[in-house]
Length: 372
Image 1 (cartoon, one colour):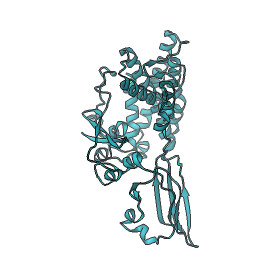
Image 2 (image 1 turned 60 degrees about the vertical axis):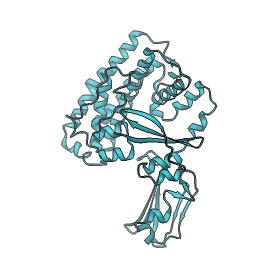
Image 3 (image 1 turned 30 degrees about the horizontal axis):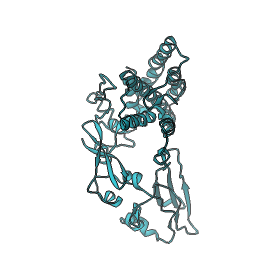
Image 4 (image 1 turned 45 degrees about the vertical axis):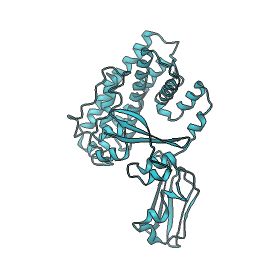
């Protein structure tokens, strides 16, 4: 399967990041001369184009638009949702005005909303109990990371990369380190590369346990929530034992890694076995208890479905593709993951079909996979 997963522009040259043959490769896109060319090409998802090339175009004032235009099939064209003045619009949310009559009221949610994490704004126009208009704006938080990295030395650059996503400190720092090492032609020792992979998987385990807690809390299943919310600390403690930081801050650096000089082999092994016992004796039994309860599964099955076709169309990778039943994993042919075995999608096809249950189930599969 080939699909576009990212876009960027360097000195008027457009670059696409393409998933192909279980690898992400860069390709120059010679046929594209402007940002709008991407927006008009159905091979490039709108969300990806807006995320890559969108610009701040100020507040949207639709207060003079009659209600019929909001309900018209051409409303995207009428309001210029995706472009305006020859530019791809709006990485930022600056406000949305709509017409409100005396007998109506408007209710706004966002722009930061915990349910979707990204900056998003929902504006309801309500008459009595009837929602007449629902305007949705899902934006992207442009933190200018690329500009912040320009001119920085490797040490400072890695520190910035670590802050891109708080629960993926190790992963982002490793990505930056690899980019830097490749750019200068530096080869790290195989043992360093292997230990880096182990730390990324440890971070993955901790995040998955925390996510299982979040899903369980959201659907009101507190036995699993209580265990996962508490026992996530076993993974973080192991990270601290190995690196000196519960979230792996400062461990990844271009050219190498930093470990906790105060730890010992006995402490490192002990912390690992605490995590292993926690998973096998506390988390896994509670997961099986939830999975065997039909009312728990029914709260998640058939909800929020993402299909295999959507995975391909929108360039989704990682967990999003795997929970939809697409066997994709960049670690399979990665030399830093020796003998890495992909998940068994054949026997799990009914549990990996793109819904919320699939997200729930996949996390437990991946914890088991990483633990081994």
